[in-house]
Length: 106
Image (cartoon, rainbow, N blue to C red):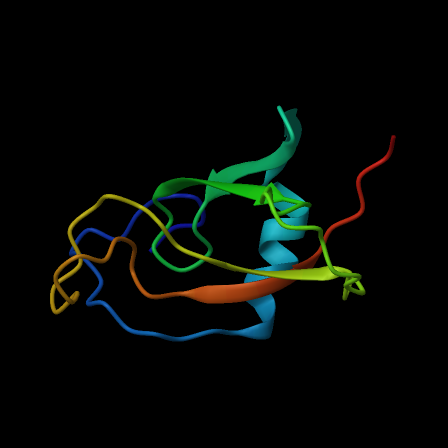
């Protein structure tokens, strides 16, 4: 598979990660404000299909929020709509997941 191109044959669904996934996402994904969220967009580091990952900093509820310490990182997963053999019904993506640190300037 050439860098930046999806595989010729669909990758089978597999819940996997690799330390390089987060690094690749940090280098290649675009980041933009999206209402109360941040939208990360780019190609999945495993299957190379386009994905978008909204990150919401707050949970909107009627109850009073409880103090929560932000860990500074987010775990993301592939949400592409491409076909991946053996993917369980009701799921999207190729099964890849990774962790990134999100720092958004005001």
